Image (cartoon, rainbow, N blue to C red):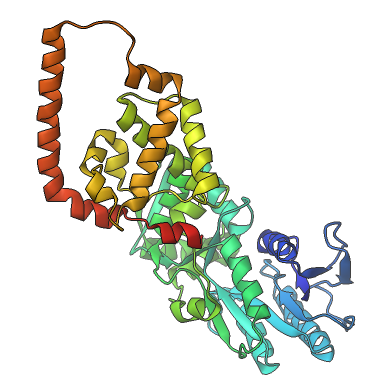
Length: 428
């Protein structure tokens, strides 16, 4: 498809262009200045509404550009510019998709939300598509997400608003994929579509995830009652409230919940977990594979493996198992000796844990082929007194009996928490 994008150099637009090009779409940008990465360019400025002329052959227009200033004249220009863009798209029979916001409504507390709602009405009247996004995060530290990261990084104490408002996150790459799927679907009807996690989380938990998974720092949260914030906003007046961005907080406190499950199912979009998407790469699979490798190799070698041996394990799983880590409980990874609860030949050959058994065998082969493993499995060649050898055998048998008894009581529950089938690996 040939897709024209406004806001192509923005936070979401940058990822959308990259993912669209990777999917063999032809991309054009409508902006004030030409972009080197996009060959097709159309002059477009939100602040100077005018008639636009699009070339024939454009299949879809994705309108991402937005004016974040609070000036009323700028907001009116933004609406007029959207009208001109809609009209130009209509003349060449291009599908029009407008990227709106969860804050959009007629009586929104900010001009940003009210302007989004006004443009939504224009788009729907022209049989276009409207997409309301939840809290976009991940990727480069830009946009509102970049602002929040900067605050979390600089401040040791963060607010925990009470009662805590909820947000519905969506990773920037999932967002871009969702927008592309909407314009690609031929039989999609004109309507408002909502893309975000179906399960809201508290804003405090969202900030905690930034601190824990992105900034990697320990932060302290202090309860801040929402009525106090609103009272303080009235005291300092609208001018100072706008200067310090307090009106954005008012939008946060009044976010309407979105029912996104149906829309996500309609376009076949599966969102990544928040803890995974917070990482710079958009996935924590590599970190989880490292933890998995350390745990399995420690269990087999009875000592912490070398970093080179762990890297070999990670590369093997990435090449042979699509880089998908086992979904093992954290305590099994933290205490590798407890993996003995699962390591039973009869049990690991069951459908529940066949993948776990495969990885134990693979880790064993890697360990045996290493210098560290040779010392563990072949010994150092020194003879031991018979009493020492007999004592070790008795201890080993005793430990094995204890573990077998415990495993009979716990293995089914552990398996239900950590199962991953070979079919899942192949499907990926």
